[in-house]
Image (cartoon, rainbow, N blue to C red; front, side, top):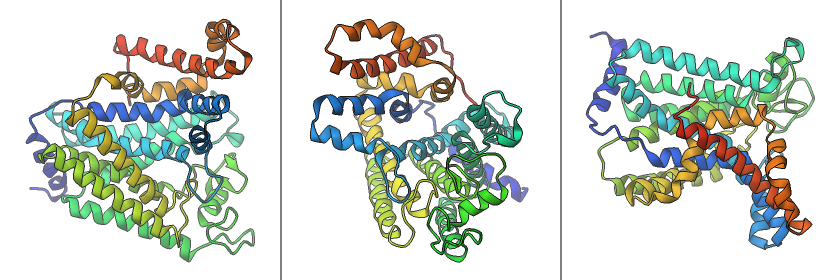
Length: 384
């Protein structure tokens, strides 16, 4: 047997042993829960906290912004959680492709096609239809997801054992940390290896990334170097998906995921002492911290939805989670505020003025959700 086919054949044999082709509802619900916050959920809770003044809501509203540099806010979870979920879904999508008999080469083509299409969609999302190549923004959220997922999927397909993949996960994170320890930006005179001006990732952007940056002057929020550590986030998701597709009893899966999640939280906080948790740098401590939270959320959704079968409440999130790319792109293209104003301004006028922002935020969510529900009912899904 050709040695190059062994990793894929091991994946094939594992997958073919699974008889159930049931889609993980918890995965769709968690994806929808993640996307809910960027389709209006964050604005709703901010408006609710302003209206009520409740301390708990005010605390949560304060969490619904990004950390400026070092540190962590709940809103920083949205991006890495989506990448993690993309990883979790890969073993299940690979399973379907293997069962369809498409073979190894077709799966490789799918991985490369998906990764590169997301990069192109990210450029389109940032710039619209533009030919001002010099001033375009090339780095993007979709681009990082596409590349990190692609590299993680290739690593998974070309390694045989879970232990080897775990070694790759930690190896990537330690290698990324070493880059920051050993190198700093030589051009701006800042001696801090982890500062906005002095870190090596921002310097690589200034050196190699064409066009304009977002959203700080010294580099790009979704720059080049952090694709390395983001690959570890994608790989962690794939490892979780592989684990969920195993034949272990469901409650054992939940228990092991909880233990793994708590362990990663501990490692993330310990690593934070020497390599600060930082979303823009996608630091190794950040990968561990958000990875721990992601696994715990996956365990919770899996327990409630797929083990306890409490599913009625999930429909709202599943409708969102089945079309995440659609709502992400639609938020950039469609003028939701105009539609919300048209449908809900009159309703808001019936209430005291202080209620208007909250009602309009509810309307914004409702308009977006009804759009997705229409697509859901007609089985229209934008997938790459």
